[in-house]
Image 1 (cartoon, one colour):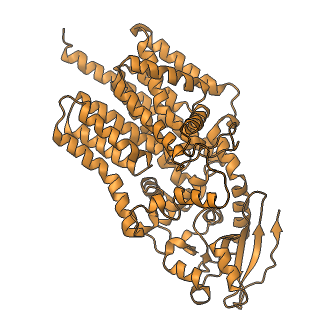
Image 2 (cartoon, helix red, strand yellow):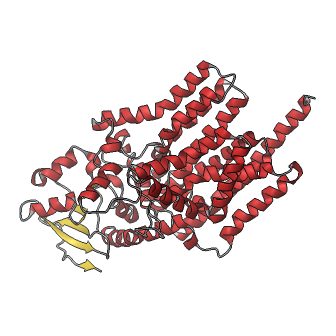
Length: 531
């Protein structure tokens, strides 16, 4: 007997009430985590977080502000979203300008996941279970409290996921176009978003019985705009359509320079089994053992329930990272496997969509009247795993950022404390854009005071012929980098620079602060080293 219009309307109202409750809870959880991380001073511990923030800032705060400051390698959407907030000095200096878009991505990602799982299993309690797996993960909560791209990508991925299943139920052009838009945004956030595009397109082609070819065309054209834009950007700005992939600052080029310098190959480099081992090790650390095993068992339950397309789409992200490790494009280091350190452990979070789907499938297998109780049990398991012996040391993403930023935080603070009170606006700082830019942020010196390689070709001319083109009073360098070599090459010529401060810590490059000394009003300083 068909459901009456009133009962169908009532069910829809109930689903949206649940969704509203989920949105409120996600917002409260996100705001609490954002505030806590900010108060602890952890917002910019990730080196990537500092870099994302400063790229967003330089779009409006540079000697030549504008579109070209977006750069290459990293995709533009996170920086474009942060740029308006990064114009505010306070939000830039404390990192919130980059953290707020990440937090918004976390909230939207959780809402879209809830709505998608409800459609996949037609079960609101399965949706709550998946949301709990997502929102109660402290690693994701930490990343959404910093200028990191993973939460924003999850919002795009789950937004596409939700609208694709909505399109399967109601093949309307708005659902297809909306899914294409989210896929486009995901492709402008992380390169994972490029890899998933063909699989999304296959879904539209083969999973929807009453599809319209116009809808398929609309989805494909909209989604493809992301990669096409970035390829055109690299060709126009850098004269190399693949600059992000094989240019000087690409991961591939950096890895090759490290190999040429004698570094051992990354674990998993052209070893598929080892690549899978390292990814799964990182995934278990990121998800926690409880969710990791529940999710894997639940994936089999999802297959039993014939949720093939949902299962396949959630498997795409882990496959992408295993293949990236295999092709040497992406390393993952975990503390219990060689080389027993921390690097890119957060990539293990890409098993989270599969684990969320799997846990939801297990709830769906429960008798209908017990599904709410099953959801409550799973939520209690996920929460209690982290609540037992609570400590940031157990949160692998926090630990990674803490270990890998220790030296950088030291020399950033030391250099900012030295340069801040001595720097006069307009003097100029010759440097390379990168980790050293954090010194300017910490010292409250606008980025437009710096003269770096993004200001090409003038910077290239100054680096090649400083005696003709270098006018800045200050320079900041790592010992041995292009700026350091330029300073040493000047020797006793004109202009002359003296290294007035050297900051070194064990295991980190020496930071050098130089000052022009042949101007009458320049105070001569003696160089000294801080151990």
